[in-house]
Every structure is written in C-alpha cells, then in structure tokens.
Length: 190
Picture 1 (tube, rainbow, N blue to C red):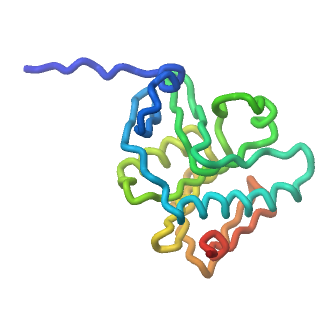
Picture 2: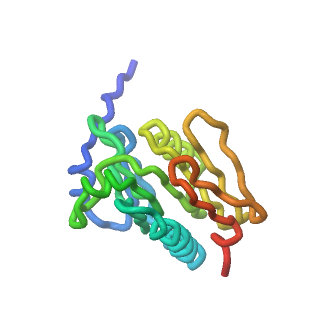
C-alpha cells in the first residue's frame, strides 16, 4: 500500500515570494492552486472598469467614513492558519477594513463585503466553485459571478441559493451596501 505524504501547507508570505513567471497562484486554506495566466481580453478589462466605475459612483454618495473599491486582481488574505489568499477582479471593503490596511500594503488583510469574479475562458467550474465556497465560508457577504459571454450575473450570499440576473434586471447591494443599484445591462454596455 502506498501512503502519500500530506500536502505541504503554504503561507501567504511563501506565496508572495514565488516567482512572477506567468502562473496565476492563490491559496485555499494553505493549499496552493495554480493555472497559466490568462491573457485578459478586451471585454474582461472593460467589465472590470465598468463595475469599478458603477461601484465608485455609489461610494462617493456614501457618508464618511467610506470603504474602498479595488480592482484588477486585488489581493486579499481571507483567512490565516491556514491562509486563504486570492486575487479578486473587483472588491468592496468596509470603512473599518480600509482603515486597517494602509495604501502601501501588498494585499488586503481581511474579508471584503463584496467580491466580484469575471469569468474567463480558462476558468473551470471546479475552480470557480471552490473560490465562491471559500469566499462565503470566510465571511464575504456577497459574491457576484459575472459572465461576459451570456451577459448574466450570478449572486451568491451565505445560506441562500444563488440567484441569476440578466440584462433586464438590477443588482442590489442591500442590506450590506445600502442604496447600491446596478442595472445588469450597464455592466455590459459597450
């Protein structure tokens, strides 16, 4: 009988020390995940900017102190011991979390309120499911999976069934991001 050695648990510091060699890496409860870096297409980049703009428009109307909207593979350490550290296309963090993470930090050390993943052709169902599950288990209150191919958004919330929204519908941030309303069609506007 062959007994395999247990997988080595990796820390965020070890992850950040790895070479920048065209491989996308993240940690799920200390376990390294890797895949070839996807060349972002025009639509992916456009959707990140569009969502960031829509969230910023909401954010500037909020009273002080405000949280922060970050995008472009925003690094987040969701958990420690074992670490879960991921890059997220777009996040919104609370004012409290923003205050704890100065602007010169490499990654956000804490859980965002909203995590948005824009699907890419190389994403697998297994990878996406694992990330969404980890986000929710770590305490993310809303996860939006944006599908640029069929112009839909699937919203995940802890303890609730996922909900799919199409271009005729509107996303809501309530109750965690009061007043946030995003028409799905605006995400995919040319």
